[in-house]
Image (cartoon, rainbow, N blue to C red; front, side, top):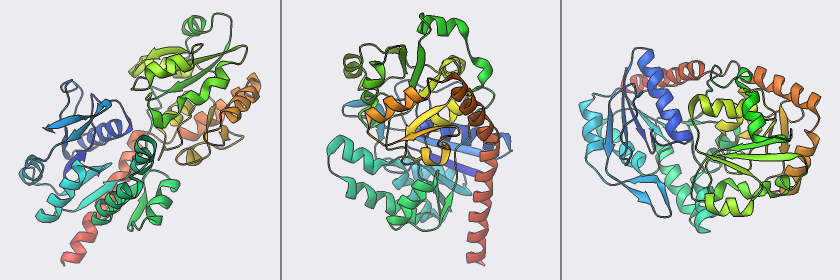
Length: 371
């Protein structure tokens, strides 16, 4: 099968859309298919472990957030889909580049599958205080035009359905259960981060307004607790001022990131706009109990009172109380074991095969219509 993956972000970008697009391309190549990626150009060049050709479309940095690139109008999209002789177009979190690719696929009569990954309407509300309706109209148009729309969680499916998107199916995200593993726990790293044996509470992710990492301020004030923040982004300087007792490790990846995850006592996610929340799944794979807001993707991932605790979104006091509850080592150990068990079957290989099943059904539906 010849598949063109059109994605709004791709490595060396570090985010959920880029990582999922890379894992999809890898799985297609491993299964003997022929993927091609179309993505916005970056200043950092191409990664060394990309399993297929990548066509970069000219782009500009998002004002105020240069790590995010917005693709510019380009004829390369339609030309690349046609030249690749695509059997199917996979639209990863379509919004700018994906909308153009959907139009090209329609003109070329190539089936298209749209994957919803980013709560762009929520981001519009957070960053601009307006534009939520406009974002949803654009999201609805592209997902409804596709042969099938895939959502990563039941909450995301409900949001899409409520805004008029049909032909919906669930497609979750995978996790690398070999890399993210309790065996990565590092005693020396823990001694460095918590020299007095403090309870290590960690956040991993982008440092951006929609993540609301400042909600950890009350946790930072607790005696015997050390907050460790891993990631970077435009909110970094302000967060360092707001959370002076926290340890900021900056951006970490690969095995180094896996060591940090496994060395935590508690993982705390603060953002209320997650359609899935990959870092929650990585913490669970690492055997670490999770605290997350009771909204969006975490509702599918965290079993409250079994693998972690769900708290009211945007509630710093609820976060603090949840951390105090998880000060009990026996409770943390029980939640950590249950979390690891819950994700062991969610490998990228298993999730990739589910995606291939969706591809096959879309192609079969097109063939029946043509017949």
